[in-house]
Length: 203
Ligand code: IMP
Image (tube, rainbow, N blue to C red; front, side, top):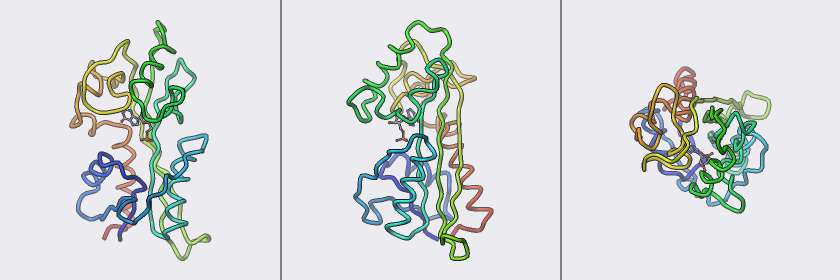
């Protein structure tokens, strides 16, 4: 069984292929000839992940999954959350601007608790099911706190500001090896992997 991951992000594809191992053939959007910029207009991570997976399923008729991630900060009532990529006004994936805004919004607040949360929506082709498919969600999270300034150069997004629980360094200082073992995304991917394997959906 081949399965499409609705992304062209090489880091995510590498990470997922490593976790899923040899029994799976993971294809990217590019691999199936999909060049669309799938709109992420949902109000929640679940909605956005499902929008992306549903687009691929409806247009290409293949089993697929998609993810959406947000950084949820307690003192900001869960912001930036689903808006993490475009937190700073008029930007898209501009990490420097997003981090500057986050530090500004938090100011001197001593409550800096936060978590990263990833939701994966999986759509499996299933002729027996009512709509010809089965939809499942898998979630992973990591708790931590927001530093008062940026630390480290590795990773991406908000990594220089996020210090995971039990560590004194940011994700950007800890590096990919440590991050990939404990991250929100790897925890969600692990649950996806367990589901696919226990349902004999590997090739
Ligand atoms: P996406 O859903 O993976 O595209 O993530 C949305 C936004 O959340 C990204 O643009 C990043 O700003 C942020 N983000 C997602 N995952 C991470 C991560 O592992 N570290 C830091 N920031 C992340």
